[in-house]
Length: 314
Image 1 (cartoon, rainbow, N blue to C red):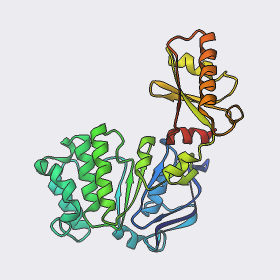
Image 2 (image 1 turned 90 degrees about the vertical axis):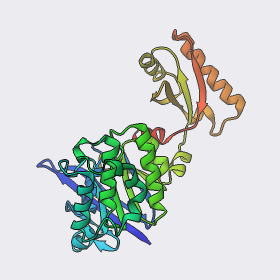
Image 3 (image 1 turned 45 degrees about the vertical axis):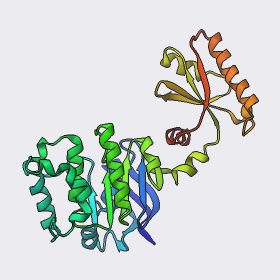
Image 4 (image 1 turned 180 degrees about the horizontal axis):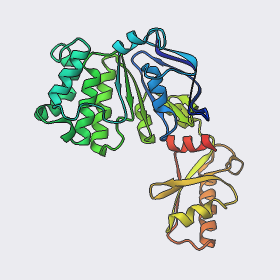
């Protein structure tokens, strides 16, 4: 059964009627961890605000936990947890005061649902008397998640929860989500970090209010049509400009210390043999050598979600 159903939702802003969400449709199964993956301004927050009944869509329909987002908005608000991208708790209240306040709002107590937040709360409990505004980014994140969970929601919306958080806290946060998923809570999370996509059961890649693809991370990666090479040499900016002029190049973009270069399928004839890969590698090396590059490294590499996203944009 689906916990969330979205049917052709559209949302525009301003006199120009700029589309933040453009006819988007998708569904999320109960107990699923679903990711909306895209850069800032892609439309992720607008989708979240529509589904949590904070915004009315211009057109289309949606339901959360079987309730219509327009007709049944009060019932939805009782059943969902929402953690917005910007820290929105009361900064002058302590950790414990914030948690108690949100529990009271939903007619429950910390004690009643403590088992749900225990694994998270024990990490911030030593700071329970500290004001929320004085917490570190990672601690604020954990407190916000506790407050979103304290009423035991059936669907949890997390809008860019790891933005601006250190790598260790990001990893811990996704581990917490994995444990929450085991308690059959449906989780919808948005993130601009492509590397987080593989932690979701299914994802939707979104840009300019449009879904580019929606499937499991593995299926999206498997559908990448081109062969991909990782290339490294001195002066990465000049390297990118030069690779764009390589005869068989389809696209190239910076990827850490490497440049990811995709090449025309015609050159590679689909799946390549080791001998063909060796020839392609040598062709790229020779091209760069003739262009004056030194210390050249070229190797075949597997595509990532980021590579797939860039390919879908082209």
